[in-house]
Image 1 (cartoon, rainbow, N blue to C red):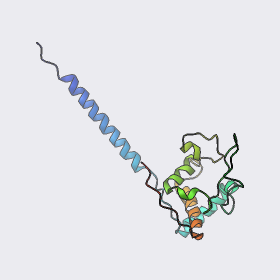
Image 2 (image 1 turned 45 degrees about the horizontal axis):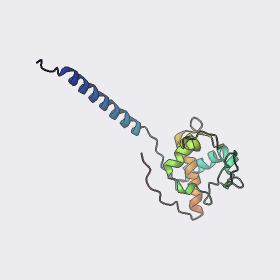
Image 3 (image 1 turned 135 degrees about the vertical axis):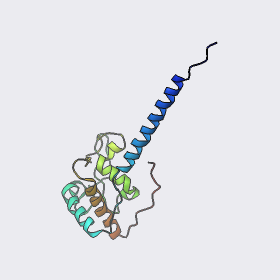
Length: 159
């Protein structure tokens, strides 16, 4: 009886090891390139910059005072969702900073995997830089603080 050759097993093990190493390095690089999505509603300069950007890019739908569109909670069949208020009366308070950032950058329904069929909310990737998105969201969150509305604690999101 011939002894079994160990070379194919050795080659397979080496290839598997290289693949695992490459996947680890890729995931490490991806984590290192994520933007800082932390909002800073107490940073006056950032909030002022965000207010200017909000007026230019967001107020047309969400209102000058973050009030949203009339009847924003009502949705008739086959109708697009209306822009919700971004002040303390809306439902954005329930989202974490990371979720708000991702919804703004990539679009609400794209993030949910539903495409853009039910919302006019555009994705701002390629329109606003990451730090500009943080500025807009910091402005919005600063308005919540003025209304004495604390942002509720949200459970950490899976990474």
